[in-house]
Length: 567
Image (cartoon, rainbow, N blue to C red):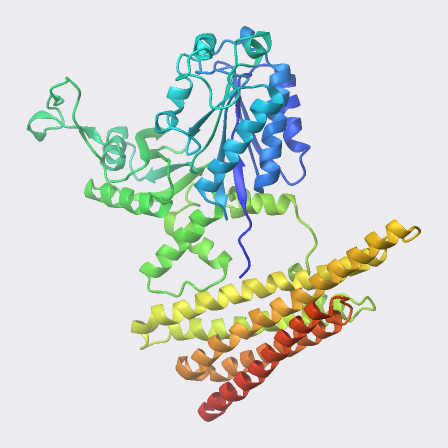
């Protein structure tokens, strides 16, 4: 199984919102780190604060965070800082946020490591907050920032108030930099739900229906009754229906409509599609329709995939369809293009990062371009790459039969059964599509290793080790292709036996493609293994390949018999 690429977001807040040169020097540090995408720089004049957003893989994002904290410590003097927003340091807060392939707990561990590094290397004391907090009381940022910058000299001397990392006596350097709060939190989505009304009161009523805080309970249950209070004199609130949400109603002159404006503070608790459906329900109860959804800022890809999958299941349709199709369903279902065109490539974090670091890939070629590239005199792409692509095509055929079966008239009760098979097929296809390019990359590594200098004994040793490492990788990749392609047999067997009988021949062709993929990749395992000096490893890899070849031949024979019997 191909592991999902890990992506995190970092949103540091710097105590400078007026000096553009200082802000640019800080953000330049982010852009110098390869693999990091700077998404947004939002300075505020009144707050004298700039919010910066960047994303990438965890290691590079953490490095970029450290560098911009370092630069801020050099450029910003907190003794001169004044602004409307609470603050306690040159870099006031620095949260890490999981986007894809990584948990909040893993981000919290990274945040603690970053806090230690900032304290040790930059002598900037750090508090750890939210998910990274070492004590429950410090989960709340306000607790960490209590008294703001002005209270730090006193807090440094009190054990219970001291920072988690780098606590020391107040000195001139600390007076310049202040302290930083480093944390980890879930992704926040800002969204507006468009209403077919101009009434802010109605929009507010819907917002109060759904937001976690809810609305004040009133005497007699009347909207104009006096707010009810408890024995402490506090207003008693009637909670709304959506956890981890904040919402209000407002009127937007630009669009001429009212909206329910919502922040979803934990998309694991309340996903966007759940919020959408609940706002629709509450709006309908008040005689109002939700006409669409406006996304403010960026969102993780999984938000749209979860939404598209949800709406497909509501329609009792297969969810084992290409990613682009699922996202299109999400866009149409929630009316993301109601007010203006919605382009996922501009709104989804993973796509922005992917496009920013775009490298040429074989899988991006047209069918003709791929064939032409293979036919040229260069040795790559070669048999291993073609084997992976044949395996992907076999998986695609099995998935097609599953989707046709899921939507076959009279088979409505089996939509989920075949949809599950289609999902499995999409996963196999995705795994093999990655291997299409990885096999060519493996060959390129060998060529690079052979190109290393060999003038001295030391260079020869380095070159020899590099060749062996690259050769081992080039042997393991086609073995991975064999294992992934072998999964196609289970899918195509099920489709030949249970799927739409009108498509049984397609399942059969999928089986033939899978067998060719397994045997073809096996040839690459053997030829590459012959270049390994460690014969024990070579024999083990070839042994695995031979076993898969035997099993593939047996599977093909058995499944083709099923296919032939139904023709």
